[in-house]
Image 1 (cartoon, one colour):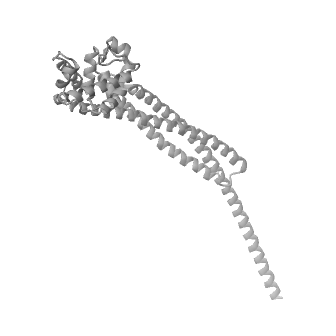
Image 2 (tube, rainbow, N blue to C red):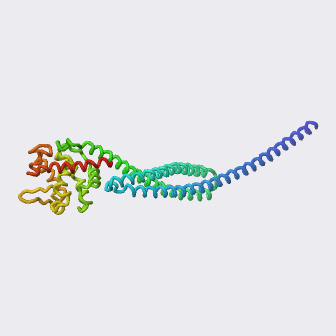
Image 3 (cartoon, one colour):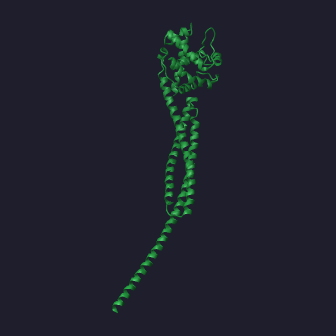
Length: 340
């Protein structure tokens, strides 16, 4: 009897323990569910907050890139066709363009950093949506992310375009500055001994020649200057290299013989040196006129020698001052180096 009583007591205690255990587990389960709901709610709030922040950052990027674009347009207007300007104006515009380019570069640098931060935020949102936040909510936010991604790609394309534009303008500025240094160096190398050996080629580039012609009075303003100067600058350096004649010397001869490129023969018939046979020669293009002028001058050099003094008698018989007139023009051209 006592044994049975003790058994009943033990069973009752076990039942009580099981009951208590179940109650505790149920309470814990309820707390766990509540905690999970709170976590999910927090994730949803974070996702919404992140998306709002990303959209705001993208708008900031758009504004910054618009500012950068405006600055680049302004800088580009300064360096556009700079090779056709006077050296004073060109240097002034380069000076103005430098700080604007620097500001544009800073804006592009800041945008690049901003783009990286936005990319991290977007990755963070995708990671948060991997949680069990509900199918409907997840689909809505993925759709929103898709729009954000498209917007980001569009802005990235603008950035890439502006980056290319910046590089192009910066390169144009740097090329121009290098051209000035190169031109000055080549003009410095031309001195009195050049007249004694006119076959020493300076190797001017067409850009250097164009700038030189636009900044000296070798071509008179009354000439249809633009097209003529462009053709002369484009072709003269190559022909000088081919026939081994100094560019400044041949320019000086041409200027003297054509009245600074204003004679009827030069303007109407592309005769750049008063060239004649039984009559004055006519050429169908500037290129043909340049080529024949260089070819004839080389023939004279081969016959008489490499100095202005030696070709004087054959080029301009009976006029000993011809070589001095050519040298005077040559010095005027070379003196341009003081402005560089």
